[in-house]
Length: 110
Image (cartoon, rainbow, N blue to C red):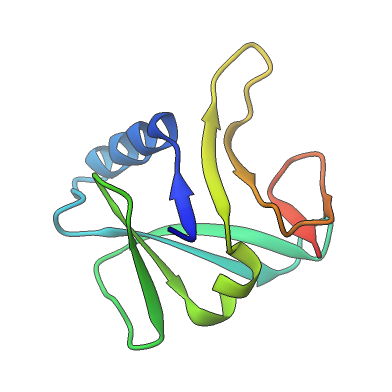
């Protein structure tokens, strides 16, 4: 699988879905990369009930991850994790392709 979600992150994604009144049966987690942020590229996450013809779909057990083909180039091998410790930041991206990551963890550069 090219993009993965840790068990803890998945639990929080599903909790957010339920809070919005949607479920993994009807919606996917859409991840993508957009220009911007401190380091030049930013991660983006949304819930989406559509799969486009240029999307890749990854079955991560309880939820499907959907990503457009352009973003796949930046997210290959990336894992979405969740940290809730004393210094916890919430969702974090562990991206082996990033050469530099900003302090907030939501943007990166190659």
